[in-house]
Length: 149
Image 1 (cartoon, helix red, strand yellow):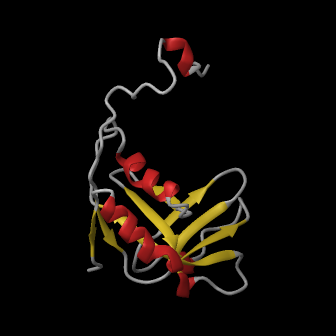
Image 2 (cartoon, rainbow, N blue to C red):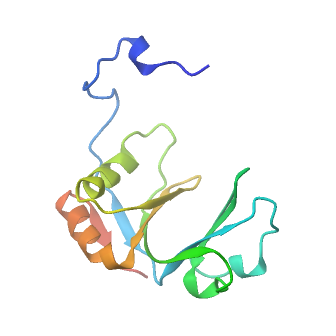
């Protein structure tokens, strides 16, 4: 059973215990990425694996693949043109506020995102046309943007 957070004595608007303002270093990923959607029972295609960032997630609704856009066949339902920012980790599972510190300024600037988490860290994607503005917003918020490489 999920407990309503209001039942544990927390008050709305109060800071979350342990939440800290994090400064994160984000490394820009080389290339343009795509987010592909396949049927939930589809086999993992050969084109999904290869150089660059790759994330494969299967749910009961879909098989989602994030990889370099030039590997995704045109017949596959996908959304291309994403720029990746890899969080310099690793981060412990009990560290709080890491993603929030990065996502909040982007939300305030109305920049849409796609976030992928792994065991050690996170990777943020923004559309290529907003990548420059996203970099400026993140830098102004105290984060460090490292070039690809």
